[in-house]
Length: 149
Image (cartoon, rainbow, N blue to C red):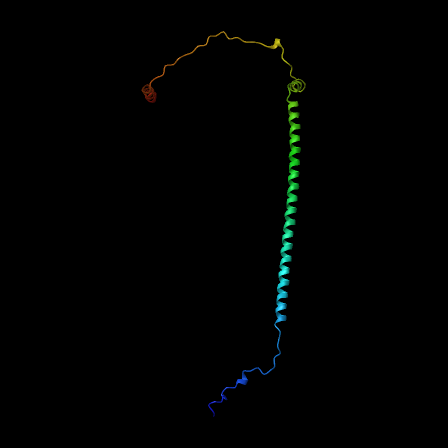
């Protein structure tokens, strides 16, 4: 064997014997870019739909709250009018003429006259009795006396 030959290595084993055609990577790149752009556009569309739906929802909520507020204000005004009417009715019923009429008709009361008035005079003098206070020790001594008696 020659030392200069390379028979020990079979380079043909490592080589691909089937002829491969030249494949273009341009088509795969375009498909990948096309997929990315479709996904990107779909994302934009979804984002736009979400934002528009949020705007519509907030507008609907605002309209409903505004209607509820207007209804509440109308109810308050109605209650104020009813309150004023009831105050006038109460004042009318509590007037002196109505009270006198009710007392005469329903309770069979009559108005008093001057002849029915009687005055009583007391001719006694006012008397005041002053009691002398005992000292503290005197109170204790009387307490002990009452205790043992």
